[in-house]
Image 1 (tube, helix red, strand yellow):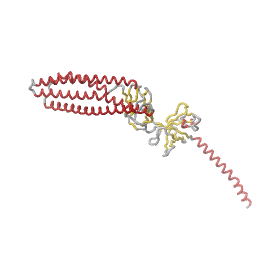
Image 2 (cartoon, rainbow, N blue to C red):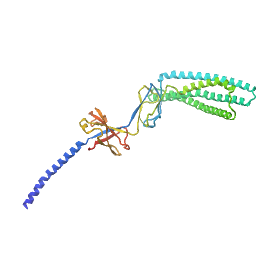
Image 3 (tube, rainbow, N blue to C red):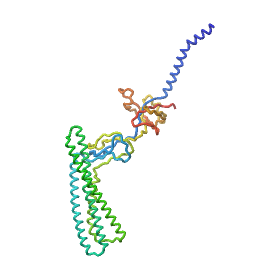
Image 4 (cartoon, helix red, strand yellow):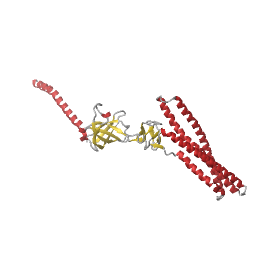
Length: 385
């Protein structure tokens, strides 16, 4: 009885020591296991591209808004390849070109009317109805073609002037916010815009009608030629110089439309507008970024490893990536690349905001379907090999 009592006391005294030894062993095992695994944070990155101005000028329009999704080839911004100071000169040159075109068009109209009168007089000398109809159709086609050209000669410069007024209104609005302009200046610009817009609407209606008349004239000519064999006629010879002159004017009008100083910036790939640094009307220098575009889904994670842990990281090292925000997701991946030098870690990943940290970068491929966004911070830990 006395032996059993002593034995029980001995066990009771040894039990705390045994528990302590077991706990110490567990700590050692956990420490060894932890020493085999390294936890760190990384940043998910999408492919990002800066949209830069290719020439010095001013921004005529920004066609997108911040965080808008765009498709490859979508127009992002339109730049006029000059400064606002040169705009007065450009406007004067455009007006001079327009005036010259209008004078030459009036001359062509007079020449066409003279030929038409002469052909009408000569119609009496011919009894052949086919010849008479060919002449009439030829004159109708050139008259309607000239009508289209005449409207375009005014319409295209007016459209360019309207876009310039849009920029001017935007500039005045910005100046009003900064108390650097008067309200009447905005009212004046808006009134000019409304008048010019109304004029353009009327010109567009005239252009539509002129184009319909031209198409109808061509249709009548085609129908006539299907019924009667085509033969070279005097009308063609008389109208040949006028046709050449009209063609020259059409090329000149095309120059109004295709201004070489207008630069259109387009999206290089499907993505999202991530930053916007300029507004319409502002001057931009060649090479300056106007905005940035990123792909919607990140494809790589960059993490930075402390130098003491670099022996645990190498290409093909398996890691587990986890989101730090809801919804919580994880996936297993591996290191695809390791940086060649030590670099400053981004400040947002420092443990102490006042103490800069340095490390070696590693790249980790993101598994398709993992939900994350550009610049999101993710948790990373190595897996036992």
